[in-house]
Length: 108
Image 1 (tube, rainbow, N blue to C red):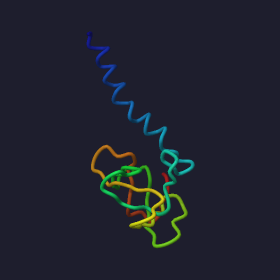
Image 2: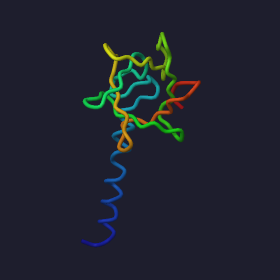
Image 3: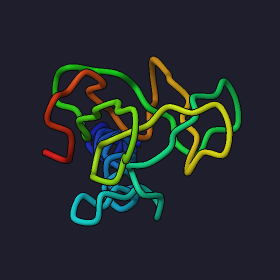
Image 4: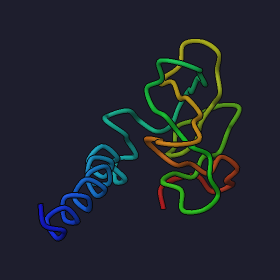
């Protein structure tokens, strides 16, 4: 196989996850695969709804942990039971990158 088609194939494979990610994350409605990115959140070690990576540079979502009324985009109330959705903290291959220490939550 000539070098140029191989190179194009490699570039196409690298770009594919970006297209899948973009389709699943809806910034306008603050959802990921239909899951609202605010509300009661349980942090789990297995079987998450969303895998997230904590980062301070170029996050998809800025998160503010609140004690009550997590009803705006990026506001999370951490719970141990009856969550709206479950997240697993990962170091690589996240579904979303989040800034967990934000004072102004939401999508940027």
